[in-house]
Length: 172
Image 1 (cartoon, rainbow, N blue to C red):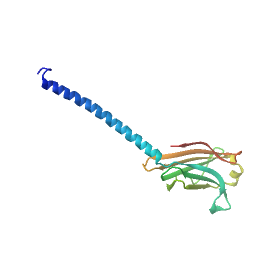
Image 2: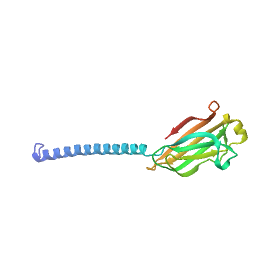
Image 3: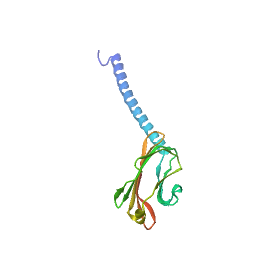
Image 4: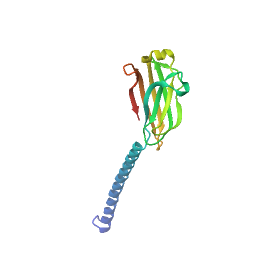
């Protein structure tokens, strides 16, 4: 059959239209997937926990009135609970790690706006030389989409402010 035959011409046009239709459908599918990912990312950013250290201060725990300690105040500034919240605090004195009971401590849920306090009670020699103390803090938690998030911060005593100041922090 010649190419000029109406049936052949109709078949060629139909095949070309089908190829174009498939290309447009693939482009629409990709755009839909990109849009779904962007929507998921926006939802996750708006409705997720944001856990950080609100403060590192000196004080006295109610349960240990005679002991001065260093209090780490974790706070969830997000809009939803931080589930499967875990933290790890490493204490260093003069750059050497001090053994503590903080390694990989797990708490079930940290609700928005509610503080979670962790105390560290240094010895007398550490209290006498606070400039030598430093802390590395890591935390991880899940939000409503089960995506794992984290916080990492490093703190050092600053004599002029008489408190622990963050050297660098990161929320992921």
